[in-house]
Image 1 (tube, rainbow, N blue to C red):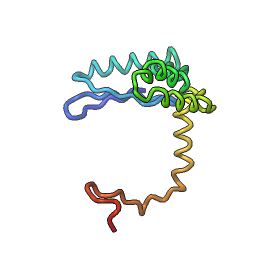
Image 2 (image 1 turned 30 degrees about the horizontal axis):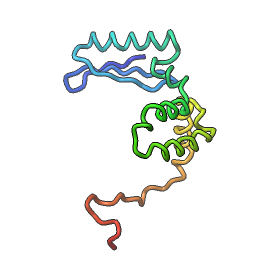
Image 3 (image 1 turned 90 degrees about the vertical axis):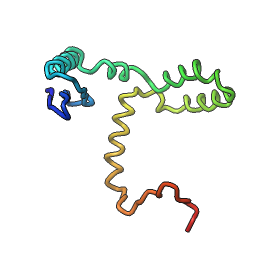
Length: 134
């Protein structure tokens, strides 16, 4: 279901569906916001996912690394060593997972680990301060 609200003089449409990352966009008119939300909801109803989610569901990390090796790595001065590092990474089983599985895995890992981390005493260093000073 779409949620359309007025925020700072613009209309904001937000579409939330279970199992799909929420999407939002702002518009000048309420009619444009409603039209966009209807189109997005129709796409989800028709396909079960959003267009970019379908690409993520069929793309593995290995495919991205291989494409990077072919297109970007040869242009670098450190091409040989980078190629070796990427090949070592390609030997890991996690690179054959799809992008959607990785994001779900990361989310569940954060949910499991976050309660055990006590960050109440953590204070980030001040900008400009020397971390080596007492």
